[in-house]
Length: 398
Image 1 (cartoon, one colour):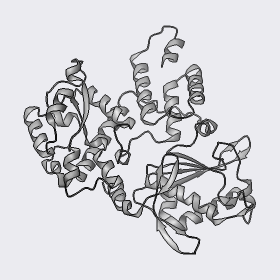
Image 2 (spheres, rainbow, N blue to C red):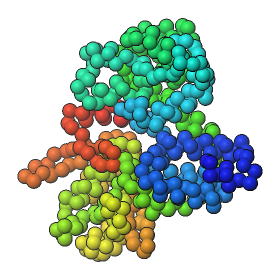
Image 3 (tube, rainbow, N blue to C red):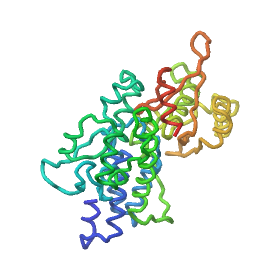
């Protein structure tokens, strides 16, 4: 933003330019634009600022190529206050004139140390911990208790006086004192959802409210340039490195150590696809090493009946059909075969699934077992069997 202002002859921005810049800033935060490969990304983005007629729209297009801009309800599941969505919640609440639930003081006002803003649980952690419905030694139960959808923004004075009241008692009192305060912080107003036994339903309802309101907030910050089409640099995406929504695989089926085709390599690809689908979606690039080196698909091509892209795609689609069903292969996944320096890659975009998918794995003894995979950082990990039901309930049943 500073570079853009510096390059403008007048050093002044129009209202439209300010709104476009603010909208880009919010998305750059919640989509973790600069959490990895910072020098390369800064160089790239500064080049866009210097050369583009519509720089902030072009920068948004770069972000959108890595991950959809639209916020999904599943993104809130198990996220704590360190996640950038919580910062967006604070910005949004302030923009709507939200107030502290206990004092009625507007969150955007600077009222000194006594009224500094703090984040507190709506359902007190101790109440959830001591209830019969949650076991805090269970990792997923603990994550749900700490989820950002169980947080309200309060002044420090109110946070001290709130203590560990039951949510139904506390929220009933808030609504009597400040009738609009719950709505302004996107807190469900159905009293049945304030009971500890309905905590999961409360989270689902608040995720839906936050998703709807935050998307509307971001979409209406500026007028989008609908007719602008930007060529996204795949090399720049690769240089950004692997992350929770981007993974590299050297090959589909060729074992580079054993120099032979290997079904276990195919299993690894299917694990990644299922993990992306069970999460928020993502992009899988085949023909790229973990360090970003461009390898291409030649080894995979040569392992097939005919060494070309068509047979490669047919083989991969058959694997997906067999393991996840034809419906998923048609609607849940999209293929492209881009070229980088005349080297062909396979680019797979996996949508966030509407239902869980399991992968049948064969162990070294020939025994088959269905397993459930999720994304953890820049890797795909199996979820422990005792955690699957809770994850599926919170990710899909809302």
